[in-house]
Every structure is written in structure tokens, then in C-alpha cells.
Image 1: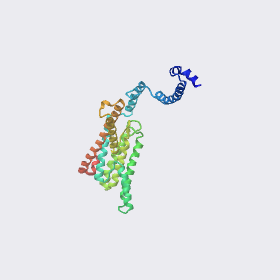
Image 2: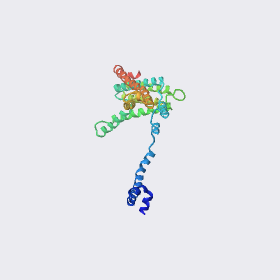
Image 3: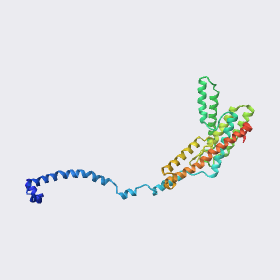
Image 4: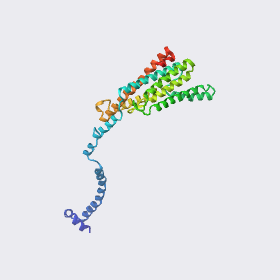
Length: 302
């Protein structure tokens, strides 16, 4: 059988060597290696079939494509800078709140424009009262300040039913501003006539709560006018995002793609709202400190 197969598949080999045994050995060797080679070549063929061709990889490379432009447009549309009169209105309120806070602390002994420190004062007062170090007056005054701030914000919700600056309709902004002024004037009267600095501080806290709730947001720009903790936080996070975008591109604006340029532009517009807001509050505190030094609690009338 081996001689017959050798003469069929390897006739030239048999004729050249004259040995059918060598032809049979060559046939057996070819029969053993062919399946092994096929098994080795199969994974390679599968990898080549799965691997994309070079032109397809180039087509899928991220660049300034139509989809990227669409995302950039949505990013720009996500923030709209408030109009000039809204910004001036907010900055003016921030300056007034800073002044009220300085005068209240200097003349009445309490910070009234925020609730974070007041909440901490409640806890400290309760701890001191529990251990007999102080009376309950400190905790009760802090509770009164917090409750007054809350009542002021509640009154604003009754007068203004929207979260955006929108004059006209049912929003009574004039009544809210007038009520703010009346609360501050009443605080001066109480402190001068009745010598009740704590009660006067409660009225100042209510005025700040009313003002802070008056303008909470406008076209995505969060506006808080009586405290600057959130403002400073937003300034820090916004500048951090801008810095990271530039650092990834080697601090070269020419390397930014269209989406990154849109993100930087939006963050820059936010800073133009937040930066002057903090500065206005700071200038108000400075102004209030000097006014309180010369006029005492009467500085609240300004």
C-alpha cells in the first residue's frame, strides 16, 4: 500500500530515489504537518478578520467633526450670561448685604447674613450649657437668628413665586425691597430706644434672608447675594476646570478643539458673574465697617 501511494503522490521522488519506503515517509510527514499548520494559522486569520483596516481607523479618529460641533453648541447654550441690569442689581444687593453684616457685627455683636456660622453657634451654645460653662442665652440667640433668616426667606417666597428675575406679573419685587428696608429701619429703632441688640439682630437676619431668596437664579447662573461661600467655591472649581483643559494641551490655546474652546468660553463667562459678586460683597463689608465706626447702628439706615 505504501509503495502504491508513493508511486501515485510522489512519482518523481520514487523515480529519483528508487525507494518507495522514502516516498511513504515523506507522505506521512506531510499528513502530520498539514493539520498542525492549519491550527496555527487559524487564530492569525481570525485576528486579521477582526482587526479594522487602516482607512477605517483613520475615519473614526476623534477630531472636530460634526458631532463635536453639536456638543460644543449645546455647551454654549447651557449657560447664558445675565443681562447687564440683572448683574448690576445683584452686585448692588451683595454690597448692601456685606455692609449690613459688618454693621450688625460691630454694633449688635452678631453676624446676620448667613446661617452656617449661626448653626454652629447653636451647637456650641448647647454644649456650653450642658457642661455648665455658659447659660442658655447663647444658644437661644443663635436659634433666633437662624429662625429669623428662615422667616425672611419664607416671606420672599410669599411675595415672589419664581426663581428668576422677572419684573411684572405677580412678582412683587418692590414690596420685597421695601420690606427689607423696613426691617433694617426697625432694627435701628429697637436698638436705640429699647436697647435690645439681640432683637435688632433678629430683624437684620430676617432682612438678609428675604434678600437672599429674592434672586436665587437667572439663566443657570446661581446668584447668592448675602454670603459668598458658594461664590468662592464656584470660582475655585471653574478656574480649576479651565486650568486642567489648558494643562492637557500644553498651555497652548491653538491646540484646543472646538468643544474645549466652548467649555473655556462658558467658564470664563461664569467668572465674569461670580468675580464681581464676591468683590461687591467685600467692598460692602469694608464700607459698612467704616460707617459703623463713625455712625454706630445708624449705619443700617444707609
